[in-house]
Length: 251
Image 1 (cartoon, rainbow, N blue to C red):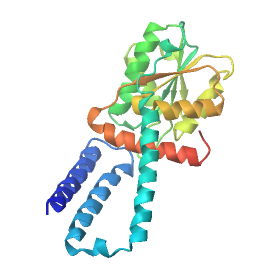
Image 2 (spheres, rainbow, N blue to C red):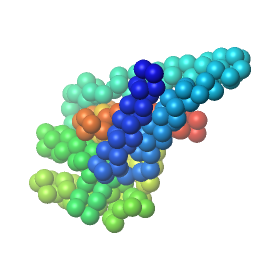
Image 3 (cartoon, helix red, strand yellow):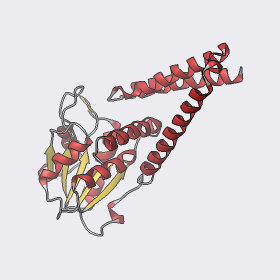
């Protein structure tokens, strides 16, 4: 009885969290993983009353448990690598200005950048004001649910923050992080120029691995904050992205 109640409560909380992510402006359908997980938890809790789970052959339950443990171990390792780079800064790598600073794109609306993108842009503006010799590259194309290319909105936001528009280069063709990094590299020498990539704390590790795989030879990362209530969602989504890029050979 107690286990069923816990299952029902947990399932409802997962569904509500998915709704919170959706209403908060989720840019993709990945938020559906939370209500889907909630429904599965509720169904599993309901099935415990019927005793049907006990009828599953022991070897099958053992194999399922082993697979779950392996996946959990891989997930913990992945999240550990993500967390290890939550506070990366160029100051730990170099003592002078970077040649270029790349701001990776994220969801934009008609009203302007999303909250997650504003964190990146504000962090970038702070660095650019402190390092006047650094050239900025804003990177991001137009998504299926966006009215304008992300890079155009990003540049307009930085100009509103007081940055010179002539100092901001625009890469507006990319559709994902790998392309952000690939297409932005056309503006500089990967082997000679010092490059900083700005992105949110949960995204730093994957962006860094993609850049190194692409051939960025003189790289530093600059971590920006993220929305606390969205962090569990972003961490899970980032883990899925990390797994996808690993399987595709991108990192």
